[in-house]
Amino acid sequence: MQNAKDRLLLAAAELLESGGTLSTRAACERAGVQAPTLYHHFGSKQGLIDAVANHGFTQYTAVENSGDPLDDLRQGWDRHVLFGLEHPSFYGLLYGRAEPGKPCAVTAPAHAALRERFTAAATQGLLKVPAADAAEQVFAANVGITLTLITQPEPDFGLSERVREAALAGVLHTPSTDAPATRASAALTLRALVGNDPGDLTPGENALLGELLDRLAR
Image (tube, rainbow, N blue to C red; front, side, top):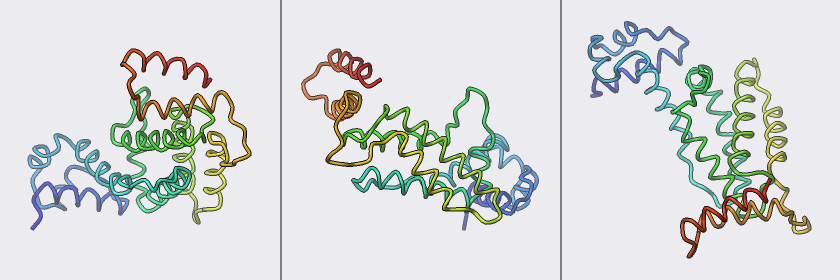
């Protein structure tokens, strides 16, 4: 039998997915509890909403790396889009209530995972820009196309694929044995490799090398 906290999470999720109004009263009635129980577990209605969004979001972020950064980035993009289409209410909670200067704490782990994927791409000499910049650009495009497809009567997955490839092309070199390395790409590659394995460098040496490589990568 579910405990009161789980029943509240399920009730709130069902109300959101059905397009209903998520009020404190509606959630409590559906879960069969009194309002003080909601406040005890979640502090407020917003606390309940955040918990529901976090639970839904973690369903698609826990994915292992395949070892192929480019393939992981493509699959990650597609999973993001599908999650938004399958859970539009959750997605609206995550990305539709932005506050100026206040990053979403719930989506931060996904953003960090994207930076890690681009760092992995950097170790293979694929990055045109720093991993953090690449993550920002692709993340913004991924969210934008997902919100666009949610509003379409028939989601255009071809549009998503075209936007995906354009976004990746803007930050990644196409793998090719004939492509000459540039100073910037070499610096980005070394930056990622040293970040993963600093060897015998002291913290001060590591910081100085990182600063120099960042300058060379610009």
